Structure formats: structure tokens, C-alpha cells
Length: 187
Image 1 (spheres, rainbow, N blue to C red):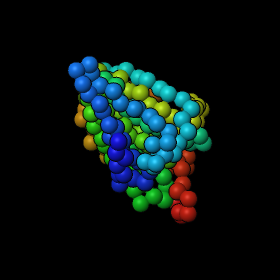
Image 2 (cartoon, rainbow, N blue to C red):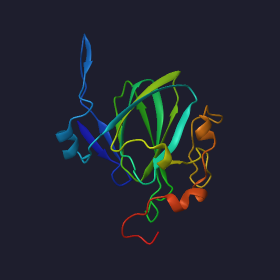
Image 3 (tube, helix red, strand yellow):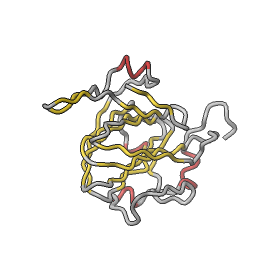
Image 4 (spheres, one colour):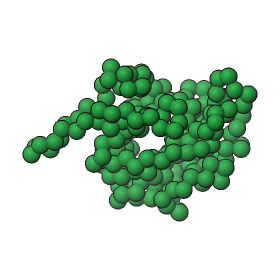
């Protein structure tokens, strides 16, 4: 099992060991002690599972007062997974990283609190499962517009399928006072 650091502090790509034979495959999708040694020392309290069709974007999502760390993986299909640094004062503020997660590559991405997260389905459909370090609270949610020019994500779709809530998401400039501040920074 490999834990690969990224350009963003705490964002880690997990490449699990997959044991294949004539019957199929086996892998550990989470092991608290191994993940802690790999830099993901998180206590997960909620698991979520979504199924979406090609062209769907879910995101960009975060929470203000109860930020969630997320361990994201794809069970079936292919996803363009995006992490945006929304921590005011960070050297990577409003920069984004993208990863291809598939049901075949078994990779996972750990998104720590302080980052916004979104996915775009690039296969016919995809099933995504993710563990969260805090409970979802709709009153605490930050929904950032998927196409906010201040972030400039190059999504692999021009006219995505969006939920009503994601369609009404705000631009980062409207949310700036609700974004986390990196400890020790001047904002």
C-alpha cells in the first residue's frame, strides 16, 4: 500500500495493494493503523454512497463550522475528482488538484478539512463511496459554484447535470467570510 503526498498539505492519494486471482480481487479499503502511518490519522463517523450518470457534477462542497475530512473512492466507473484549497492564508488558496479515480485503479483520495471537494462522472455512470470525519449538516454547508472563474477548474464537461442546490451555489467571493483561515496566517 502506498500513500502519495500531493502539492496540497494533507491531501493524500492512497494506492492500495490489490490481490488478484482467477476468482477476482481482494483489497483493504481502510485499515486505521496503516492509514495513520500513511498520514491519514482520522476518525470517520459517516459513510456515503452515490450513483450518478455521465456528465454529473456533485460539488464543490465543504462545511463551515464542522468541516469534514473525506476518504473518497470509486466502486464502479470513472470520476474526475477535484480538491480545492479554500483555506484563506494558504499558499495554494483557490488552487485545485484533480485525480482520476476508477473502479479499476482502486485509488483513493483523502481530502482533509479545509478543502472543498467535487466530482464529475466521466463514464456512463459511477458509484462513489466516501468516509467522513464529521456528520453532514445542511445548515453548515458551503456550496461553491462548479464554474467559479476565481478557481478556474477545467472540468471534462461543458454543460453538467447539477442538483438544484449545486445550480444555486455561490461564487467564492460571496462566501469568503465563511471560509476557513489557515492558523498563523493573516488571511
